[in-house]
Image (cartoon, rainbow, N blue to C red):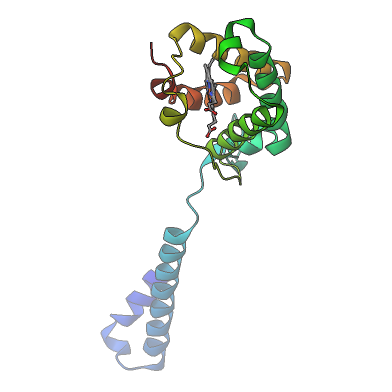
Length: 182
Ligand code: HEM
């Protein structure tokens, strides 16, 4: 269509004729259409997309870890179980002995908020940074491993899939350097 319009435009016999004016308009309309298409493509949202496998054309935005974990209540269940395991582990007695019920609740809330934020959830972490909180507690590599094991067991209890478990543990791992002292 555009080629035909251009051919008419360059035809010397049709100079200034109505056909030529019409051809000009057609060519102009196609140019405008091309510009609009390019601009629209450039402004399309660049969300992460993944294929639903095979030759399927179905695409979908990748959900946040927060959503994939099941949201706030699901994360809270895991954190509650994690805290219970920590608080009842004889190895950790020296850390949590003397903690009031309210102090345990505060710790629980801080960990929950921290995980929620890390997973992309609509929460705010109001606790202190990990270095400030843990410096002086003398947490060892073995303590760290035991705590990580408790968290994995809590995630397993609620059947959190491997991919989501790995993502949360990767976040927790980034804090190790600020928590472990020996
Ligand atoms: C699994 C990795 C860990 C995470 C994600 C974590 C996270 C946290 C958070 C968010 C707080 C609260 C910060 C605040 O009160 O402002 C905290 C406090 C605390 N953590 Fe950890 N922690 C981890 C490992 C450990 C380990 C291995 C121990 C010792 C066995 C430990 C002992 C404590 C204690 C005793 C407090 C309270 C400190 C205080 O209130 O003065 N944490 N932790």
